[in-house]
Amino acid sequence: VPAPELAFHTALQPATDRVEVDEETAISLMRKETPQIDKLRHGFQLVSYQGLGLLWLKGIGKRYNNYWPTEWRIRK
Image (cartoon, rainbow, N blue to C red; front, side, top):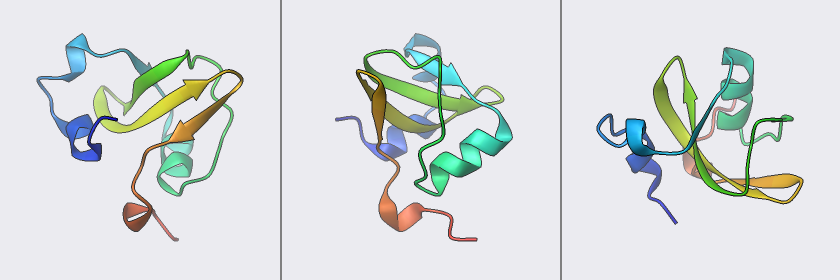
């Protein structure tokens, strides 16, 4: 399981399988909600917004697990 902080590392991003999302989806994921993401594949993927890594998702069939730490979630 990748460390949450590793998603922010800029040297890692070009070599990592990732999914680019819009602002609304990024905020929703950081609230620990589960928006629909069509481009997600099986396994760990880096979610990015405007080219910057945010968090890790793990695709599992037709759903995914969000690895954004609960204590970091946006509440409002």
